[in-house]
Every structure is written in C-alpha cells, then in structure tokens.
Amino acid sequence: MAKPTFVSETETAYDSATDPKTTSSISVLAGDRLVAYANNGDQGDGDISISGGSLTWSNPVAVSVASNCELWMWTATVDVDKSMTVTFDRAGAAGSFGGGVQVFRASDGFGNSASTNSTGGPSLAVTMAQANSAIVVASADWNAVDGASRTWRTVNSVTPTAGNNLERSYVLIGSGFTEYAAYYDDAGATGSKTVGLSAPVGQKFSIGAVEVKGTASSTSPKGRLSLLGVGL
Image (tube, rainbow, N blue to C red):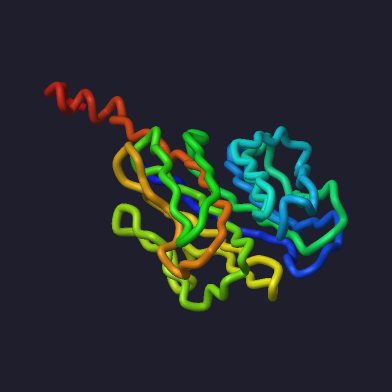
C-alpha cells in the first residue's frame, strides 16, 4: 500500500465566540479527502455543525459530554476541482471555539474512526482497516493545561511535532481550553494503534481520530507479463 499525500491544513481562529467561523480559501481537486475538526470549551456551549464546498459531510466523531470540551470531526470527498471555504456554526453563543480542515490526496477513502473522553494524557486506540493509512487526531482539554511541553504518542516510529509539521495545530485559550490537532502520515500495518499525547498529563480530554486510507499498490500489466516470462 502507498500512504496518502498530505496537501494542506487550514483553520479558523479559536480565541473568540464569533459565530459562525469560516476558513480562508482552500484549493482542492476532485477525489481529495477532507477531514475537519472543531471544538468548544464546554459541552454546554452548544453543538457545532459544518458546511462548505457544497459537499456531503459525514460525522464519524462526536464527543458531547457534560463538563468536557465538545469535539466534532467530519469527513468529505471533493467532487470537482475548486476553491472552497469551510464554515463551523455553533448552536450556542457562549465561549471560544474554532476548527480546522486537513486535505489529503491519493487516497482510497476513509477507514475506521474512534473517540473517547477521560483524564490524564490523551490516549485513544483506533483500528486501521488498511495498511499505511494516515490518522488524523484532534483533542481538546477542558482543564486548559499548558501544552508547551507536549509530547505526541508514537505510531509506527512516527511522532508528530511542530518541527516535522505533523502537528498541525496547538492553541491554549487561557482558562478556557487547550486544543491539539495532528496527523500520523503512515500508521504502518493494519490493526490497533494508540494515538494521542503522553504529556502534558492532568488533562480532562475529549479526543477523536479518523483513518485516511492510502492507495492499494498494484502490479502493472507489463509487470505481470514479465513475471510470467512473456517477452515485451
């Protein structure tokens, strides 16, 4: 299998209650796979919905638990080449919120997803349906612990950091919440993978993950004939 190609990440501001919030323009091609995520500081701040690109958005992750950040993740496949924006609209009016969109290319589609909420260092097991998939992870901490010393968990020798550009977002909103987003570009073999952050601990987190498949490798007709000993 070949891993998908990461193209871009575009996000709104997180530091205000302005509603709705819309990204800047995103250039996409037909067949691109989009994974979007958004959170607010508290479940009582209201559910978040998404629109954009005249696309059909699926909602594989929705964490909505009292006294936790509300976390949503969506997926969509681009129909035609275009420039588009994505809008996050919240049902409530209180507290800061925001969201982001990651774009992948050379992908067979979306695989499995998972979500949970708990305390400590964010940890989530998600099962890969296809080898060499990417995993998009979003996490939000209701305790608003400072994540300056954050450490992402390692999957298949891949550890997202700001330096390698696999970490795509980190926002600390004072006493409101802390937001994290990253992707693992190649999760390796199929099976269960544990994503998230091992530090900082002391979090009260909501976390979600979505698998983005790569492309299945195939042997060309010429290659198959060569293997059979047929001259070309």
